[in-house]
Length: 258
Image 1 (cartoon, rainbow, N blue to C red):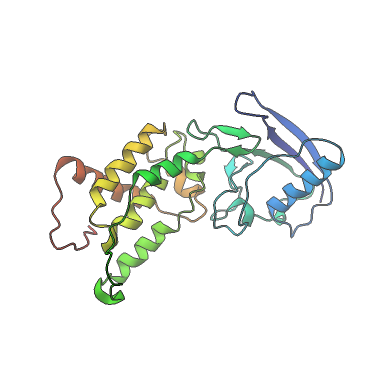
Image 2 (cartoon, rainbow, N blue to C red):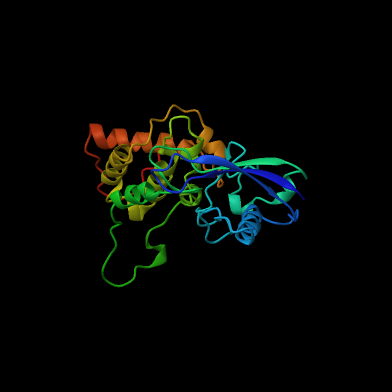
């Protein structure tokens, strides 16, 4: 396959940046998108040009570092797929592909396609800890969890923190990410003691980081490689409202999954 790539090049955060055109040959349909980028960098090195900087780690759709906007869509044209899981067979021979970094105020560009997503880390840190017993290990059956609640918590926990939701949102909101992280702890009994303090702290940090407001466009859900539902945003909003308007009372430590 022969391709024409329009790639965003930016030396550092202070550089204005520009689009650069590259022609690449020898791309196989069974290559992943990141393997194609590796091939591009090999050819650039052979010509004595600077390789394109981009993030990657696991290359298995787990770590969330492969953040690229491909033809205007975070992670590319395939729904429920991270960039590292996107294969070149989804593109035709001779295609022109535009590759850009995440575009969001809270995700400043470091170099080329690499952005600073440490704002997500600070939101997680604001959530604090989960209370655990310091004594003997408890019986696994001591805290029963309803299967439906467990499945819902696991759905929220699949968030890999890639930031596609922010890149897709017209307002650059991080509500889906924050809601997923709030919910997967707030649904389980272990997360109940700090449940309402956690949602207040994480939402406050999200606003401090400069993310935009949610307007229910649902672009975040459409771009999420793990297909996380925007219903978690509603759940987080309810918890935040309860934490703001009234002191929650949960004397038995039971789960409130309403």
